[in-house]
Image (tube, rainbow, N blue to C red; front, side, top):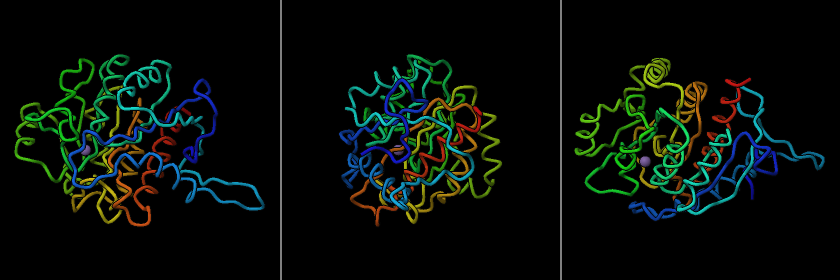
Length: 286
Ligand SMILES: [Mn+2]
């Protein structure tokens, strides 16, 4: 089943290419099942966002803008193939949107982007810094694993929504001068100030990575490693809309874990986050 908003039938016609990576081989979470997320999010997007009247199907629009992007759902691919596919999408001037899977897939995506784009800043939404360096190539070491990619610019990168760092990660953040905004800091500063700080930090090419656990478990219970006191769903969508206007070259949404969800509310929110973010990239271009 395709993502509900997919509206073109081939790669050539697309502005945005959606890809699922149903892989959780580098997760160490006690909660299993993140590999089921891509198909679950597709299915729920069709069940909750499409209405049928007099045999005509109508799809809901994202909140602010009309949907002007041409979206192709590429289906699912293997983790070992994702970096090549991302390279192809980005070098063709299209925007990749990847649905995981565990968060280590982001390092593979960035491997592909690193081959095509220069001076890429990462805006990383996560409850956890994913900055373990004492262990590599898993969902907790994403930031460390991309340290030597030559076109990823840490000086224009930022982590938002943190609240459960390990001691080693705080040391690594300090050593690499990675800017972070904790979940409670978002409340203290206010959303507009957070956007200002992102604007000060990033340059022309922004890649957004969303770990669904950045959202409070009240809104997103179906994640691999929940952490209390996260962002509200509308706070995250506001931030994504503002950041995606700044020149986003792609984004991903990771770590939805359908087996632990409540009535698929997390998959539904993930679907809405995807389309809201895509639609605001349209705003910038139109
Ligand atoms: Mn993560």
